[in-house]
Amino acid sequence: MDLLETRELRYFVAVAEELHFGRAAERLGMAQPPLSRAIQRLERRLGVTLLERNRRGVTLTGAGEVLLHEGRATLDAAAAAANRTRRTAAPGNRLVLAVKSGADHELLQKLLHAYAAEPDAAEVEVLLCGIGEQPRLLRDGRADAALVHRPFDLVAGFDSEELLTEGQVAIVPAGHPLAARASISMAEVGNVPDLPLARWPRHDGTYPPGPGPEVRDQSQLAQLIALGHTMVVIPVSSRAWLWTDHAAVPVIDAPLVTTLIVWPAHSRSLTLAGLIRTATRL
Image (tube, rainbow, N blue to C red; front, side, top):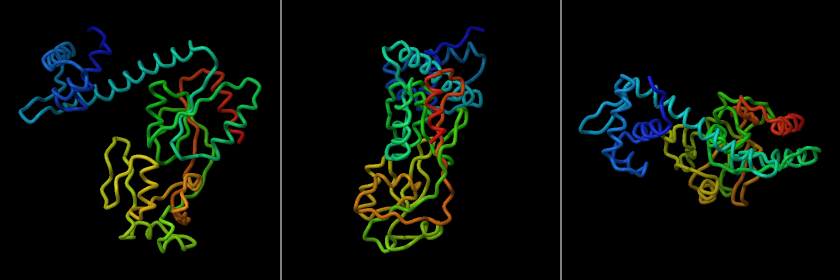
């Protein structure tokens, strides 16, 4: 059997994610008939049915679910190979460190300062990203390493070193009665009718149920808290982005959060190893 081509995988993943040939064709910038024919050829060559087609749209078969998972990983690996090859050939010695916007401000400053003092230090580009984006940036080769938070971020498949473990605080409007509290419990946090918890997207992009507003980034969250529409529970070190309209209240029984530096398990970069060594010494 012939090997799968990345073009075929890209076509299939688009259809599998959209569950609609028309939307997938639009996303790929092509007409629908050749896309349908390409998927049919792929099914014949593999000898399996990948998609169930009906009047209401498309659903994945068990084989389709497997190919979607494997296809995403293969496309990420191909993109990573291309990105890392281009960056290796670029002039100068540079590392890209992915960091969630607004998080780890003090730790990041210490790391960059300490690493810059190393005799063979490379230039470090800080790539600010949104919630949960660090794993994708590592997998597709746009970043060499990332700072992530356990238990919130996915770390499976990466090498890692723990850098910091800390508690959490509730960020509330400065004028709210909770702002005067010395501490608060998780049970209390979830039972404030006029200040529901903000809802962050899960790893699959969907939002958990609840009365609080859906938030996508730090600036949106900061504005909603200042307006008295929501609150959030975050690691203590993330308080660096707080406005004067915010107050931080320790949450006494919140789960501890561990900051890790993570990188692709197959990396053999001596330059990256130097950055990791510096991080673990902080």
